[in-house]
Image (cartoon, rainbow, N blue to C red; front, side, top):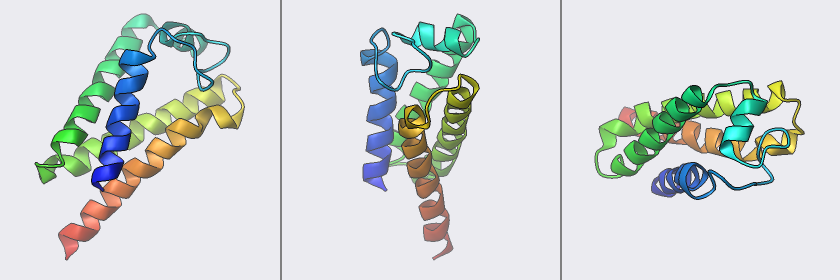
Length: 123
């Protein structure tokens, strides 16, 4: 599960810091930046920064959870919920399903972490 935590964390940090003002094939609508993407979803810049702050915080918590196991399930569970929200926004924007693929992959990884942690705690 360490790999999943690293993949999720790097992906989120990449999107919110490195690619924030850059176009990607995964952006909603015809957006060329994060701000334009949130405009596509009819969400305010304030909401964009709140969501970004929460996602980046969860990404950091997932990294920390490599050493502090108690953080793993809540951080991964919350990240999964945010990824479902991202998928919903793509549907709201009538995007092709392929644009939801990164969010779907991160959702599956997040849920995988939760399931693995619950199963390991049961052992």
